[in-house]
Amino acid sequence: MEVLRTAILDMLRRKKAQPFASSEVVQQMYPEDWEQFLNDVNNVSREMQDEGLIRVSFDKQQNSSDSSSTKTLIISPPIKL
View 1: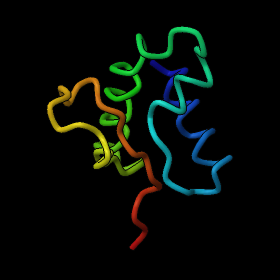
View 2 (view 1 turned 180 degrees about the horizontal axis):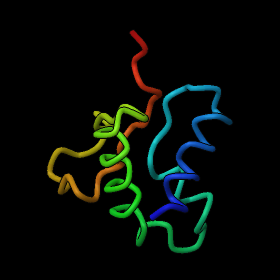
View 3 (view 1 turned 180 degrees about the vertical axis):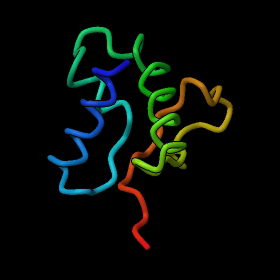
View 4 (view 1 turned 60 degrees about the horizontal axis):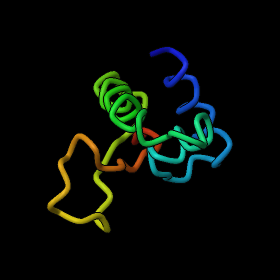
């Protein structure tokens, strides 16, 4: 979803390259029902990581019994060499 890619990159710019949760992206876009879009933003985040645009890690504060597809991911800028 191109709109999610744009929203992720925009939030990265606004956060001045500081890490943020993937849930923040969809909460801003869909404040009422953001949970329905968490899997979508996580999938797009993983695609963007594969392309080298961002880094993605798991939020270590979440309950480990949650399924990984519904966990919030932490999004960071790519590592520059």
